[in-house]
Amino acid sequence: MIQKEEEEEEEEEKKKKKKKRKKKKKKKEKKKKEKEKEKKKKKKKKKRKKKKQRKVLVLFLEFCSRYFQVRQKLDLWNDEDRFQTAPIANFQASFGLKVTLACGQLRGQLPILFLKLC
Figure (cartoon, rainbow, N blue to C red):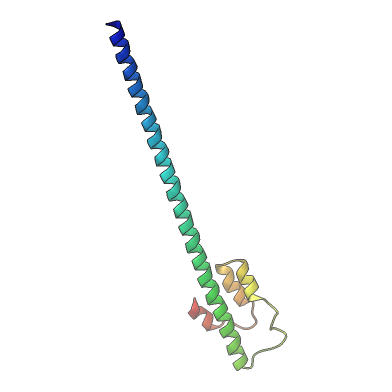
């Protein structure tokens, strides 16, 4: 009788331990999945940011080339203000509002071409 009870108790303990192990395993798997999701989100964000930056850079370079072409055609080109500011260098340093500032530093008014491109 006593032996039977002890065996039953041992079995119950084993079952409890097994349940605990399963719970732990499930928790670990859940955490792992969450981490993977986070990683994927971060990757996507980085990709999006890079794409956006690339797009803005292309627009800016396009603007610069058009701007200087127009200035040459209108004979407003002076040797002294050719390399006075380096808009491309300023631009590559940071994106956003500083793009406009970098363009605004060129002598003369900010051309309409740039506003259309943005």
